[in-house]
Image 1 (cartoon, one colour):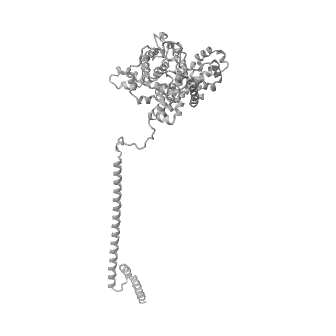
Image 2: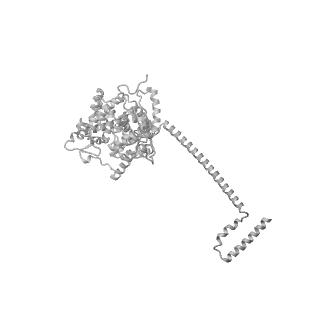
Image 3: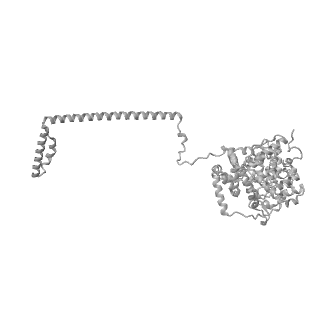
Length: 534
């Protein structure tokens, strides 16, 4: 029977399952321990990200955007978030470009929710987190989670106090996930992921608290519950859509992606690929924390946020690109390999990468320019999966299909967003739906229309017949009048009607004219008598 590489005491996957020994390893801690925070007693100063600093000189001196540019970007993002379905369906490339430029800090948490689809999941199951939060949980996971809490970003103001609100929220999120996915349980690498999400979730619970009577008493509870709920659903989307199978018991998915990374490295940096092959360094030894924590424990914080902005938009290919860039610039030339003669030296160099290669100004343009697409990742995934099955058999963890970014997640869940419709030029009344006719009513209306049309035709026929009768009557009357006139003319003898219109004019004419008229009438009579004679 084929043996899985995750089994046995020497398995690399055993180093991230949350035991006391591994949690005390300083290599896996984010920024230190509680004992190191004792210097922050009198006055605490924080940088713009919320991390504690001892002096102002220790703060970041990075080039910041002008206020005008930041406000313009915020206005653009607000417009996108208000019309998210439209932008995602028709202008996804524009969203991708704006994520590469960086999401404004004030809207980052809200944008992450829309990009990952966690907002839709939360709306579909509004009471799920509350239900999970009220449950007790598995004691074996709760013990490990409690021991992990103080190791998550202890220099951040949200988690600086042991047992404070930040650690309580983190505990609730991680406990809820163990109840939501009992087959996976808890993995240590989930804690920094959930902590980053909690830092950036928008404080929208204040709107709910202001509408209550005792807002001063319950505000903190509502606020914490809402933040935890948002972070929980974002964590669910990362574990199920972006990085499925990463936190399973055998860590088979992360080992498979290690092989994919090593295969892609051959194209990106052949020198680094040959060196790692020569030293026989398995990718799981250096890329596990990078991928499982999404570089939240590796990169400077400004770079972490920019990488996460693109990761939520474009998917796991961003994580592959970051890893390839770090390997390329750490081991990609013969000069850099002079100090890496053995396996130990190589691993030390990858644990302590030169900071200049991780700065935001250098790393982000390299990520954008590197041409490693989701198609490349999926092609290598199929190749490595085939090899895995030949060596170890079928995967024991049946994880869901990985989705590459916000567009793929949105397309895979059509019920999660409203269908796009044209804005109507005529606004219908609100009760328009109740005014719609049933089939029976429609049939009755058609019959009534036919009856009305039939009546109209009958009326038109009757009117036509009446008009015909009237015409006949008028013709009959005209014939009778003409006959009477003929009879009258016949009684008078031979009367010349041409002389009648002349008589009324005789009174107005002169004597001379009257003589002329008399002569003309006589000549006409004589002529007429000649005609009649002839």
